[in-house]
Image: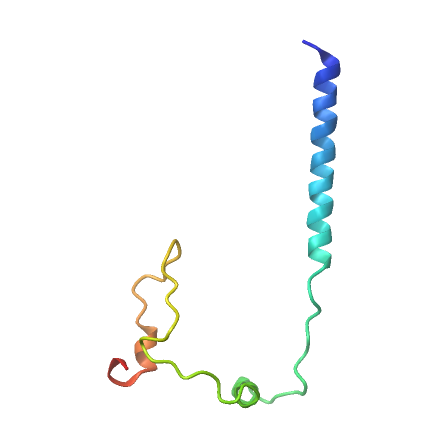
Length: 89
């Protein structure tokens, strides 16, 4: 066995680990700052109403327009959208 080659491989692996760790640390430092709300709100509902107004009323959805996120993730038997729509529309 050539120990020089083994040592070279170990050194290269160590450098790769250090670089990957440095890249991960760098990526974590680049998160955008958290922006606090523009003012204090007495309740979550008051905050929601403020955001809803800022969004111009938001987007009205029907059962046909709500996002479909089928794939690897599944919420199981989720009937929550039904509470938002009258007669399933």
